[in-house]
Structure formats: structure tokens, C-alpha cells
Image 1 (cartoon, rainbow, N blue to C red):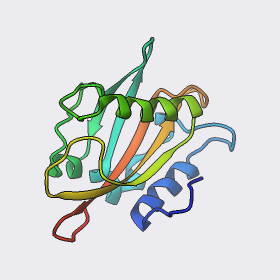
Image 2: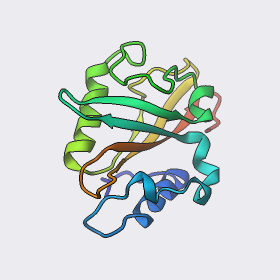
Image 3: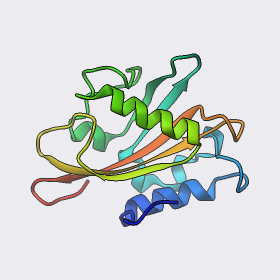
Length: 155
């Protein structure tokens, strides 16, 4: 699923959970398949984005986990991901989300965040997983972000 570098154990567990809830190999899981009780230790790092109908496509935050709030992410329920308050490069954020929706494939990366967090976050690792109520048309993106802080800890 992912290229050369491998996800850390917590992110790998999130990806494995997403894979486990797929209703069939050729179908995407939907929100109805996601059971937070199955991954309680990951919940603080999760966030959920609604894919809004229409064109141009927009992305609205539905849920933000506590670890994101702790890291200084200012996005809240109801905010749109193209809001320039959330990122110095909202076009890049939207391009990533569009790629996930259009390809119907997860996106994983490690490095400097493209959305704003506190200045003490050194880097992030995140996985963004498409969800589709009908198994085919992405209507949500379930994401997990792990924060690597300048003091050496990870949350």
C-alpha cells in the first residue's frame, strides 16, 4: 500500500484496522464499518473530514481528536480545510485530499506538517484513509496524525 518508508507501529495499527473493516477487497469501508471501540488507544490522534457534494469539491472537518488540539491545530468541527487560517498553503492541502478522493486510495506521509500546529511540533506522521458509504464514492476521510515534538516525545 505504501512506498519505501514504513509507518510506525501506531500508524500501522490504524492502517491495519482500516484494511480489516473493508467489506470486500475491491470496496472501501464506510463510516458505518468504523467502530471506535475497536481502537480506543488511537482515538486522540484521529480526525474525520466530510467530502462535501458539488464542485469544486470542499472538505469540512467533522471531528478533531485531543492530540491534534494539544498540538495546536486550530481546525474545529465545521471548519473547511481550504480555510487559510489552517495552512500557509491551502491549495496543497486540497490537492492531497482531492488525490485521496479521486484515486480512492490512502495517503501516508512523514515529515513537516502542511497544516499549522504549535511551533514545538518538529514533524508529523499521518495516514489519511478514504471512507465510502457505498464502497466506491469517497464521502469521508478518516485520518490519524502522530506528533513528534522537539523535546523528543511523540503523541
